[in-house]
Image (cartoon, rainbow, N blue to C red; front, side):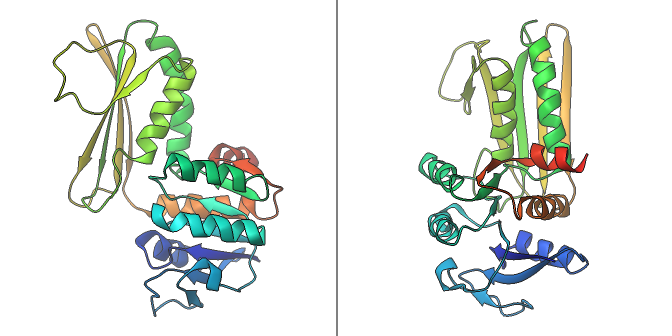
Length: 254
């Protein structure tokens, strides 16, 4: 049985992951970390990582960016593999995650769903053909009104995948209201919508002359992200130090 610590156990994703692992016979949550110290968890909960002394094989993180620095330091000290799902990290924190991967296994993904990670590959193929044909590229993402970061980490990951296939020739434009000029061909527009209880929608638009091609992924439940995180934790436990992503998980299970 793989033993996991849930960082952010009191949040919606932490609780969803707990509910799913309760039916899992290969991975269990043995401890939680959350400053709110929720009282209804069936395992010990600690306010900070440094207070947690429970033995585990992997950490699953779904928390907030300000909580990450102490988690990175704790995982490095204990050489604990980390499934890093929190988005909105600063460049300095991303550097810390990369440094952590030199001493233990780290799996970072802006989105844990199988569908999104398949879409990343499809977009790279499409962009290689359509951008050269003069198609403009726009990304529109929609999330619930409680989401803190914008644009979403997934929207940025989609843009990065496209830009990588175009040899990083494009810049990202997030707001056109302050500039009165025609759209450049060397840009990817990214728009964020926040409202209601939308779990997550990402629409990628390739707009050419007299034709438009659209890719769209819709998440109807947070369970798809929780399932992906659990798969990632099972994959990462016991792995050597290094930086991994969901494509490694997909390959291992294909």
